[in-house]
Image (cartoon, rainbow, N blue to C red; front, side, top):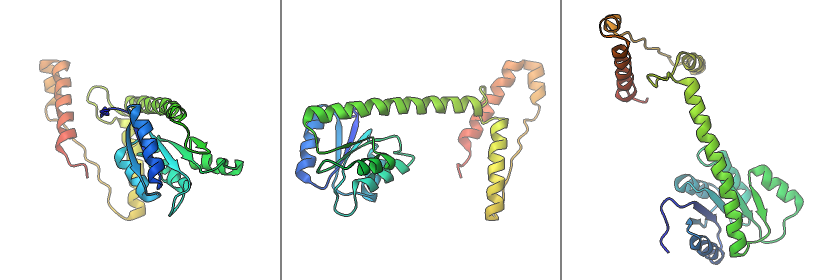
Length: 219
């Protein structure tokens, strides 16, 4: 069955090749795009960052570390912090372990790899959570832009300038580096407004903003 490139991405972290293969088969039969990491810890977190999964299914019992550490690394990375992690154990976990797993960022702890239908049901439940989180992130980004950017030019506004300037001056004091501020004045801008109207003046501002946004170095 061909997998849609836009299908939900699921990462399996499991050093047991047979169990991982079964889980992969179950998930791909549902149309998910699946990657398997036999490693744990930093290697799995790196794969999570590059593969960008929506849900991670991680075995707790791993050779060089455990699923809790993999979960902590994934949740600590801003690139993957929104990912839901299902932690799978070989036996029924004790309550104190479940508490530790939830504190590490796991969405749920499973006593064993469930049947196909139950596994897919768990995945769909976490996908719903993931989609809500991503929608909230998008809305927060939109609201930040409303607050921080000038609606006509799209450049950061005066309030954001003060916020960044305070932060950068503090950084300069701590590191001993210099902090520079560039002031730009448009020659004869008042004459453009007076002779051609405010629409022409607004157009000049938008073009200037575009040149500043695309013509400079990022660092």
